[in-house]
Length: 476
Image 1 (tube, rainbow, N blue to C red):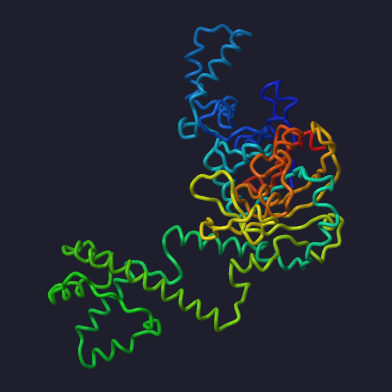
Image 2 (cartoon, rainbow, N blue to C red):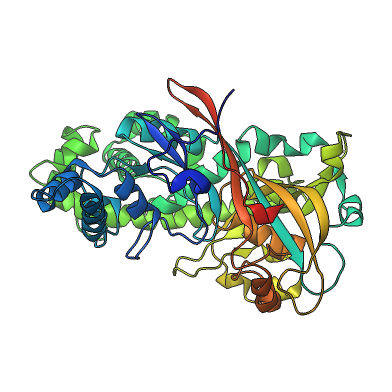
């Protein structure tokens, strides 16, 4: 595996900051500063920063026009800097500059610092996006968690030892992608309004045509048709058409054949569409009710195999656990956080965890019917050191622990909410999830102590590459 930690210097001011971690013709990797937004109508953002460092051809042309009469030298450089900032200031998104070469392929929260990879072409972006979508990347974060209510160190040795111990095979559905793939398929079906057993309009048309054909045929011909009926015909009956159909129209439909595409484009197609569209909706409502009742009967009559259910696979693991068959020193201080996360669709900033996994009633949602869609989420946490700090606190020492976090899934705020609401100890400086200790935490540090330390990613033509961002000095 190739490791890249060198600095490509575009400006002397980046020597101490180590902004650029890697730069070639396809990608650029930066050490994102904390408290910097990705894009948007703000005075500073990653988007604006990258436009300043890598002006698009259009932006460069506009800049050259402004500096056409300027002399080279210190005055020119100052004018160039000012002119470029003025040109960039109104730009909020990538779409506003059509030839902007920099394309974002993943995200970091506003308050999180560390490794952020961007592509310089559509081809490079597609390669990186595919790696993230197929869960081929490996991300590592470091964080400082705090105990602002007592001097006991957070996530102490006794905390980890008392957790339930499971064999590593318990993680197999997560490791091989089975659980995530099943969730994605379900989400795709939900987004399209479909379900297992859903019938699209062309399938309903085939059933409708067969029904008309059976009604038309008599005698031995009808017997032949009945023999062709499948066991699936115990499904709900097809609704009757609310629009009258004449015998001549039936003959015309049957002569057109079995292609719904041909029927809807025929001279009488608008009538068949007005019949089949509401019929399809009504029939699928009946099918959904039928399958739900059938599944309920199966649950009552049979022993449910948890390994075949996405939800049960997640709930089959406790919210906090450690592995029993790895005696390495790392595993002695390692444990897993398994809690589904819900992200509300009304643009609320905070996310919620499955109420059954919350460490405290403070973090539980009373009205569970109001919960958003819950997504399976898993994080590995390893304690690196434990201690105290008295920096900026009037109340004496503050107990802290430094942890290494490896997200197995990539939900919004996953690491933050898993630590705060499931483990019970928030990241120091996390204004959203620190709760009542927020004011005290902000007195110790002005930033959230979460840093994207390392990213391993396979890229087409490059193999697997590793990028590392130096940890902020305060973390040590």
